[in-house]
Image (cartoon, rainbow, N blue to C red; front, side, top):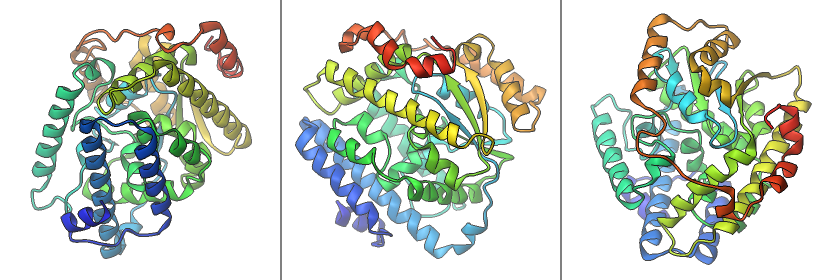
Length: 373
């Protein structure tokens, strides 16, 4: 795969060797644990070659354009929260304001050589549209669960994947040994790479403020704050017991695309444990950084009930004002994109062998701390 990516890009410098450990551990775990179907093996291989090629192109840009390091990333906004807690729709709404710079999915998914001034953007967008069309054929029900597309804002994992350290792999593939190792890893270098990628994207298009999001940050908030000490953190809160079943369903649907054998009870157990680790870790980091970092609490139900009022609070937290034009664009987006536009997403804790009372006890500290019970 390394040689194939080098052949595709004409490049060979993969940068610091520490990425190789993550890559090799992922390959080993995938080979021995994922249970790939023939189609799944092809999907995984393409995923790896895509990310290796991205890495080569990113490092080449960084090495040949040292002035990228002069791009300041000031007071970026990070939306954090459990999966299925409203982070995606909030990100999409904030993207309706032209002053907010978001990484679009076509910018992060599959890179090609060049910075885009030569019209190469159209080639990348067309390829991304085709890939999402193919994904829809493989997982037709996925759009009921999570909206995807090349022109939508991408999660930070779209950038972190290029270092082979993100929750993307654990979500898409059954790789428990890799995830166990990853959960013990220091993510500081990954966030430095994340920042370099923002600098590269900022050179293409600027904004008043970067608006970024990923549930990943719950597990790695300490590293995020080390690299972005002036970050504005917007944390969404939803009862994890409700979010858990919804996300387990998402994971099951993604893994069905690559494996014919699924154990929904195993998925339920692993993500219940992983949710608890992330929430506990975030509470510890927040306690340690009290008074040093900027946090704003947002209730999932407040977002559902009155999203524009929530967004006005976010702008005020960042020392900004929401314009009437941007507010109207956000209202129009909400009307055009109802949550169930592709059908209702059905799920239950029982599907994944989980008991509501037991999970409520697991998350008791978080539920009480943020009044989401």
